[in-house]
Image 1 (cartoon, rainbow, N blue to C red):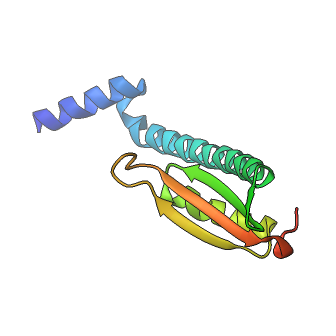
Image 2: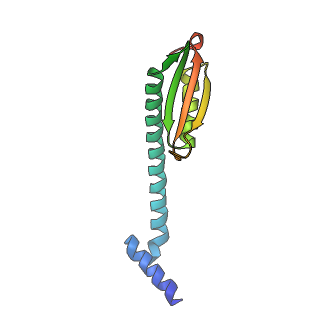
Image 3: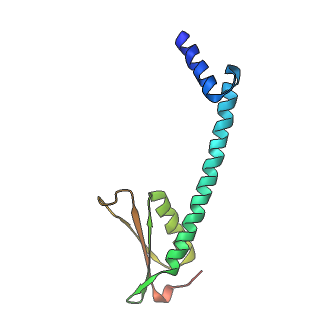
Length: 121
């Protein structure tokens, strides 16, 4: 029991609130963390949209096919990038490539479409 009281006292001290307000303070901080995570995700998506737009504008053409290449660091961003490319370049084929052992946490995205399909957003 004494150990639990010490833990509660330490938590109270770390949070800078009386022991009776620990739960309220934790709930308030959790809400703040969730708000910040939501803002961060929104900023990440805005950055992703911008980088996808840049990749579309810098497409390379090989044998009449426009290729868009894009690199992301996580699978969720790759999924979102694929969705954005499909939205902006209506008719395309999308190929996903992992870089493997050299860069284990990076993924490459390659999108190609015949020139006759190409429309800029």
